[in-house]
Length: 111
Length: 117
Image (tube, rainbow over all chains, first blue to last red; front, side, top):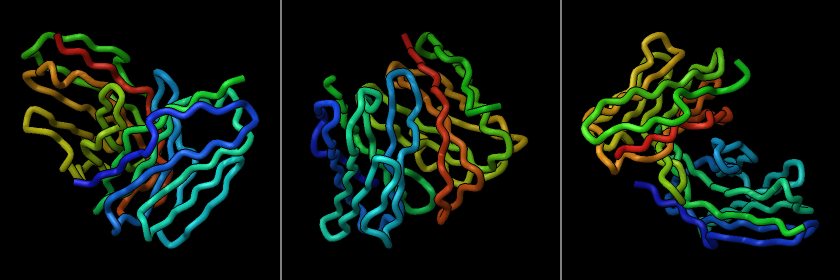
């Protein structure tokens, strides 16, 4: 099966600082990647996605970087806010349309 | 409805019992996904429907698990002879079209927390 993992299980940042969450994936054939945010008691919420033919994509306060050479994905959150506190998952699409999620990184924003 | 809904929100059952978990996707969404999430883990893919048919059920752990979507909207995940290891949050997601090349956003429901005693 696929293997998607995260380098750090927890991350604490000061409010207003930038956050970087990393993810390693194993399938070099994966063509599509997504970052999700999950708050306690809720389902994952889409943040941003990127296709494998891109190396960077920006959204509102978030940027995803894809390095296919080392099979690494990162999520950058600018000016982190208390509302950003949650668990963040990366997910990759396998063959067909299955999505494989990493273990998750718990982000805590310190006011 | 406004989003994906799942019922019940919590289900407690005894080992060996049969359970059904329901998912109501966003109206008009043709793709529907079931995932299982254990504590401290990311969601684990179970099955994906395109319309009424199961396009990929490779994630179902064994033949005790079965899912249907008879009219292409509501889906039911059925678990027979439940085991303690089945305890988890079962998540449902839907997207507009889905498909292997699709980048349609998957919208998740809040999940059903299943506890098998």
